[in-house]
Image 1 (cartoon, one colour):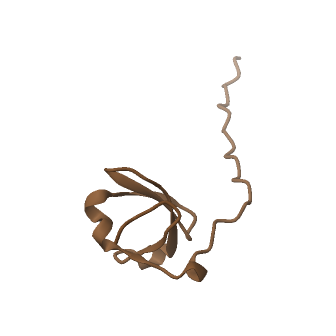
Image 2 (cartoon, one colour):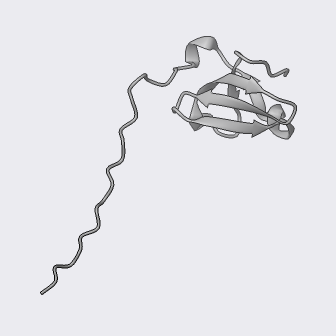
Length: 80
């Protein structure tokens, strides 16, 4: 399979990721946004395990803004 930007593919070794949309392709790797919400970089040597997927099976990630992590503030001991 020839991997091109915009293709919808599935990773036969990780079906739990769902279908993915190819975001970028270089000679060394492809960046794919999968339906589970994560972007993954797949090495060109592993392109053989990517298969075409039905466009209807790709669910783009929601547009919800990621929640910011709260930072803990160190508590200083009081001097006596």
